[in-house]
Image (cartoon, rainbow, N blue to C red; front, side, top):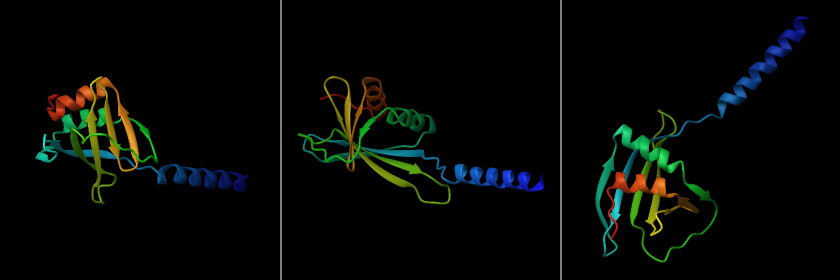
Length: 137
């Protein structure tokens, strides 16, 4: 009987370790925004670090529908470049992601990050425009 209980306990501990070991919580801590000027250069950097605003952006970015491993190309320069600061672990430096964002006439937006191409719906795009204080040209 002791052998069965100890075997069950050992299996339980191994399963518990396996489930918790791979958990990483990725947290958005800051967003730096660069608007693109008419001549194609980046305007002054705006740093967004307010927790409520960062949380609102995080929820908007979670709505992006991604297509991975593609080589996206766009006909014009992006409207906004956003640098996301993500923290996986308090003992490690933040990881940076660069999002190149195009706001479309239909109210949606297109995002390119590395070899990924994403689409964001009207509601998420509206949040980005409000927070980034983006005005349509």
